[in-house]
Amino acid sequence: MAASKATSTSAAAVDQGKKTPALFEVGELRSKHKVGRAVFAGVCSAQDWKPGKAVTEEEFLEAVKKFENAPMKGEPRKEGKK
Image 1 (cartoon, rainbow, N blue to C red):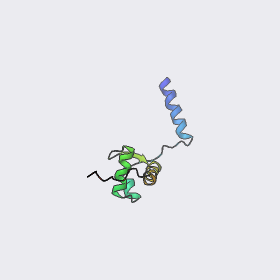
Image 2 (cartoon, rainbow, N blue to C red):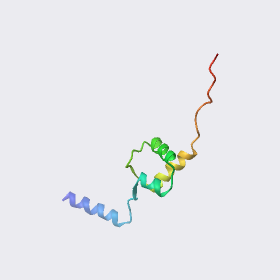
Image 3 (cartoon, rainbow, N blue to C red):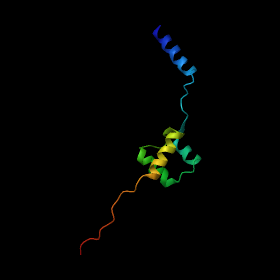
Image 4 (tube, rainbow, N blue to C red):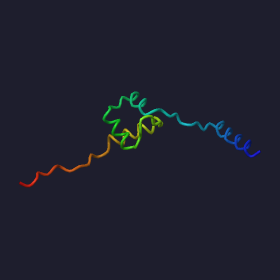
C-alpha cells in the first residue's frame, strides 16, 4: 500500500512541472559549442570528467568559462647556478 502512495506522489511531482534537465555527453557538447581539444582536455581534467560523462549544457558551459578565466599559475624558471 505504501509503494502505491509513493508512486502517486512522485507522479504528482512530475505533473507540477518539475522537469529533469537534459543531460548530454561531454563530447557532444564540445562539438556543439566548438570547444578546442586542448581546452576540452583541460576542462575534463579540472572537473575530473571521463569520456562519456553526461552533464547538463549549462554545467558544461559554466565549467568551460571557469577554466578559460582561471589564472595561470606558475613561476618563471630560474637559471641554475654555475
